[in-house]
Image 1 (cartoon, one colour):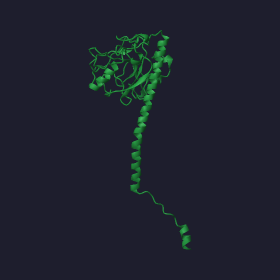
Image 2 (image 1 turned 90 degrees about the vertical axis):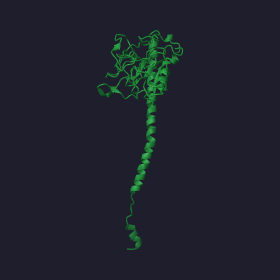
Image 3 (image 1 turned 45 degrees about the vertical axis):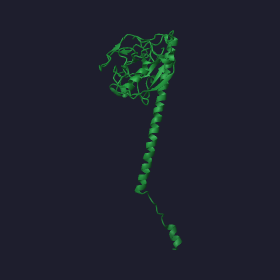
Length: 268
C-alpha cells in the first residue's frame, strides 16, 4: 500500500480542551453572569415598581368613582387600630369597630382574598391583586405559603373618624398635594389607615405608620387628583417601630415630607 493510500485510512487526531482553557471559559461565563444578573434584577425591580404604580392608579380610579356615586362624599376610612405613641406595645383592637371603612382587613392575619364584603371599593374593580404591591413578599401569620391580601393604606386625612380629616372631595383645597393611598411597610401594617401626625402636634416627630421602601428604598403614593408618584426615602424604613420616633435626621426629613401632604399642610 502506498503512502497516499495509508494516509486515507489514518484517523484524525481529536484535540480536547486543556484544563487551563476550561478554567478560562468558566471564568468568562462567571464574569458575564456577574454583569447580566444585576441588570436583570434591576429590570425586574423596575417592572414591579411599574406594576405597583398601576395598582395605585386603579385604586385611585375606584376611589374617585366612589366620590362621584356618593354626592361628593369620600369613601369612609375608619378601620383603625389603637396603640400608644412612643411605646413598643402592640396595637389593640380596631376603633371604632362598628363604623364603615374602605377596607376592613387585618392583612397580617387575614387568609381571605379581598372581596366586596371586605372593601367598599371592590365593586368598581373586582381584581383582588390591585390591593397588593407585587414586590410585597410578606405572608399571612400562620400561613407561610399564603401572601397577604393588601399592601396599601389610606391616609387619615381622608374621611377618617379621627380629627383633621376631609369628608367631601370638594373640601380639599389642593387635590394634587393630598395623598390618599400609601405603599405601607410589611412589618408595620395592621389596619387599613395610614396615620400621620401633623406638624405642630406634641408627637410631630413620631411615625404613626411606616411607609414601605420595597422599590429601591422607595414607595408609591396616590393623590386626590388621581395621579401617582414614586418617592425615594433618605433613610431605610424597614425594622421601624409603629408609633416610634424618627430614628435620625434623614428619617425625620422623610416624615416631614409626608406631613407636607396631609390636611392643613401646603394649603391642603
